Image (cartoon, rainbow, N blue to C red; front, side):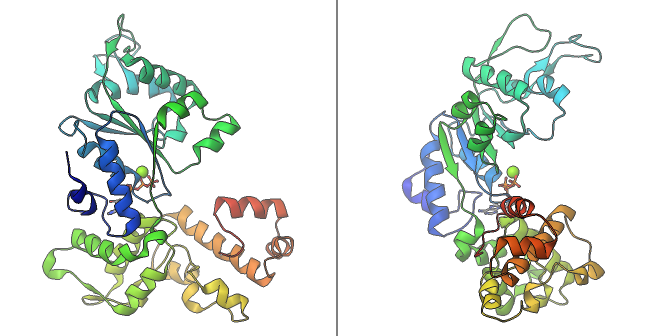
Length: 344
Ligand SMILES: Nc1ncnc2c1ncn2[C@@H]1O[C@H](COP(=O)(O)OP(=O)(O)OP(=O)(O)O)[C@@H](O)[C@H]1O
Ligand SMILES: [Mg+2]
């Protein structure tokens, strides 16, 4: 157990940061760690959901027991039951020996269902049953085993709207989110960026070779919106390390995945053109490096073009859609997907 003052310091946590927003998260983690109730962790991609899950486990009375993280989106549907519940020898062709499922392995510990929105409906029913009954039957077994696991789950999707659309079961939704924990995006706690940079550089390089981030480069990092949150900050710094000559990371060593930074649209709408600085996801970058992730890179380009069209059309969506050669409906859909708001 951990005292309230420890909650404010980041020493005992994986989730780093000194901002008010992250301190509130750590305090909540301390409070909810002692209970066995399920926690649903929400937050944008790369905002630290898995770290939060590990922090909850490590601050809970189950800390010395297993923490099993399962990426629900990565298991083929036909193997899910066997993976979650395990099987007896001979349960099906190829089941040559008995195998424990995730529930059995996590017994007395914590089972973290990551990307929980990806669970197929049929599996949702089976999981709900196992969670409610606290019993699991291995495939091919006669009897059920009593299992004691704490369930944590995470998703970057809006589960409530998936429930509305019928792709996520309401009963499982209520069961999972007895407690909800939301992680703030990095842009809502920019003051943590220098500290996170320091931790990331330390992780990547031995102390002696730790490069310095120039003041101008740090200004750019702090001003950037980081749609990919801390993971994107890690990517930006890793690339900068690869490009920087010598031991100082300068502004030109930074390559951002999403081009528009805070304030740029404002400038543009006041009649200035979009600055060079705000236009990195172009073919220029392709000459020097391949993108770390093609979908992220393409989303960055798409985002920039949509934002430019919005500025050019003075935020008239119909006109912006026609400038881009797409229907208004398509524009709306893309803006929603990329979370672009008119006045972003
Ligand atoms: N507050 C933080 N302090 C230190 N590192 C962090 C923090 N938040 C995130 N990170 C780092 O950022 C990366 C992404 O974190 P994590 O995997 O927990 O995010 P996520 O929310 O689960 O992302 P996704 O939705 O893409 O699965 C990890 O390398 C993690 O170590
Ligand atoms: Mg994750």
